[in-house]
Image (cartoon, rainbow, N blue to C red; front, top):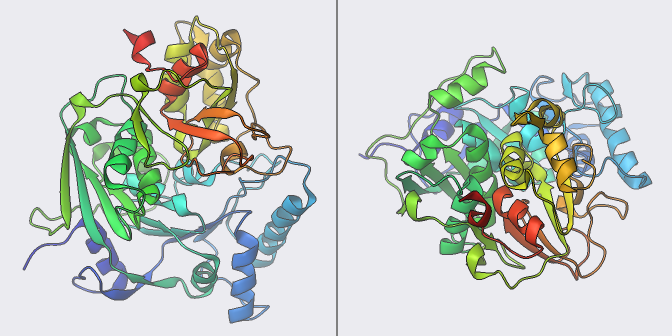
Length: 434
C-alpha cells in the first residue's frame, strides 16, 4: 500500500482516520475559519438561518474576521458590510476581529492571517475567499469555500470534503536572482492551463522551492486556484517552523508526504532556465516571456495585493527603481500594516524604500488593503476607469477585475512590473539588473 501525500495526511488526521484516498468524501474538523467584508455578512446570514438567530459559533477562538476588500471608500454599502461584522463580533465575543480604522487593523487577510500567527503547519484552514490557498505555504491544508459551507462551519466546526488527487511540481536547481515565485507559478499555470489542476492538491517541492522565502512560497500557493487547484502546499521545513514559532506559541505538528505517496502527475522544472514572464489579458494562463512583449505600451503599473504586496515584493521593486524614474503612473499598495511599516524601516544603500519610491516618482503609497485588485467602488485607489493597459503584481486579469471592463491587465513579478514602469512598456528586468 502506498503512503500518503501531505494533503492526504492532514485530511486523514482531521477526519480521525488512519488514511484517506483521493475521491473519498470525509468530514473534516476545521482549525480556522476566515472571512472578510465581502462574504462575511452572507456567511453570518447562512449561520443564523441554519443554526438559529441566537446560536453561538462553534469556537470563538477559531473564527477570524479580517475586513480588507472594500474598506477605504465612501461607499455606504461597503461600510454597512463592515458594520455587520462589527456587530456580529460583539454579539459572539469573537477573539479575532481586525477592525479597519483601529490600531487592531492588519490589512489583506491572506498576508495578515500568517503574520498574526493564525496559520500553522498540519492544520485545516478554510476561508470565504478563493486565495485562502495561500496558507499552504506554511504546510497547512488551506482552501476557499462558499458562504453556505462557511455558514455551516461557523456553527459546526467541520466540513465535508472530497480528498483531492495530488499533482506535484518540482523546481530543481538554483533560480537566477531575476526570477521570483510569481515567475514560477505563472510558468506552471501557462503549462497546464487555467483548469489544468481542477480540484487537485498542487504540491510544490524541489531545491528552488526550498530556497524561496516564506513570502515567495505564499505567492506560489496563492495562485494555485488560478489553475483550478483545490489547494497549494509546500512541505514545512525549518524556515517555515521558525516563521510560525516567531508568531504564535500554539502547538502544531509538522506533516510531510511519504516518499512512496502516489501522485497523479509529477512535473519537473529546471529553475536555472526560467525567464521573467507575464500573463497576458485576460487569463493567468496566457504565458509569455517579458522580453518578447516589449512592443506592449503601458498606461500604469500596480504593485500590491496578497500576491505582490509583501515586503519582499517591494524590496524587489526597489532594486530596479532605485536611482531611476517611472514613465507611467505607478501605484503602490502594501498588503498589511506590518508591510507598510517595513517600507519605512527597510533601507537600500541608506535610503528607505519609501524614499526610493518617492524619488522614482511613484504615486503616494495607499493604506493597506486589497484596493484595485478586486476593482472595488469607484473611489478605490488604483481602480481602472477606461481602456488603460496595466501591468500588475496581482493574481487575476479577467475583464473588469481591476475596475473597467475595457482595461487590459498583464500579470508579472514585482521586478518585471518595476522595470516596465520605468520604460512604459513591458520590460524584462534583466535590462536593469545586469
